Length: 100
Image (cartoon, rainbow, N blue to C red; front, side):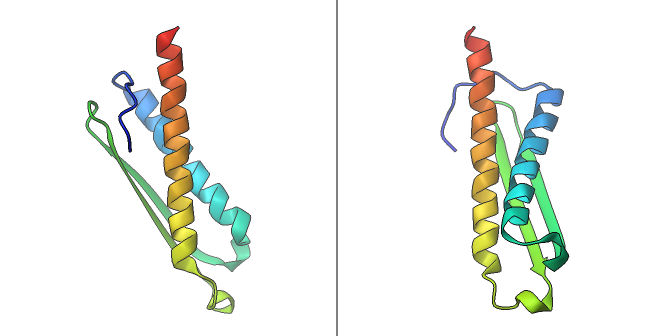
């Protein structure tokens, strides 16, 4: 992710960032596949450091056997991208607040 010029995040902001990213990934998956067709959905958001802030997003999806022809890999990639986009939006929001 690009350098955004944000301040160091508090522990509360780190927690909120992780929640925002997890929600974005989960919402994306559920917008594509009904919850009844999902056997397992694990989303892990891991942050390290403060300056620079490193964020890892891991999305694991297992679908029911009736969805065996569905492209799970692509869904995982899309959900991960949505998580990172939400992280960037969240951080940009913090940067704007800092500038005021």
